[in-house]
Length: 262
Image (cartoon, rainbow, N blue to C red):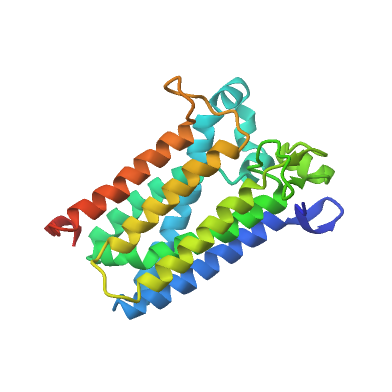
């Protein structure tokens, strides 16, 4: 729709990058604010956010390489291209690696794991909602053909050149579907975290709601992911089931409050 915010000769400022940077800053602001309420040190929260962001970018790229393995295996030079660097990657890969990084950091710094995860959950949802607007601006993560009144049509040649999105074809605005779902999740989590709750419940709810919304949106997205078990579900949907199971498992063990999670 609007992939280049500013352009001067060969230089341009990608709209996606600006929105992702904005998402990161707003997510940190929300998380630090909630962390102060929970009695957590702002510097530890900020450091953890930076480490998780770096791990998230790496994890998202790694899972993207897995999904597009045939392309990268046939031409490894594609790994080092500007388009690969600019690509968002697969969010779930970033989420899982960021979560693993957070667990290690929280353990080393003696931070309460469940409380810390809770204060990060609303910011994650808000950041993802804004990041998906960046996807919409760039043209990536597009949907299948759509005949509904709310279908969107990409016409900018730059969007096609950068992401490969088809031009002149009405598509499901899957980026906006997911952005709207994440914004609703953020509103719910931000409201609930101010109310009495068990530590870990907010993060568990985030995993459950995000997994369900991502699983549903995937039915309308266009992608070439393999169907690993021969069924109708993509690999991303199977990962969504895993993160859903983690969220439900977290709710289940909250009744016992195991010491290793505190």
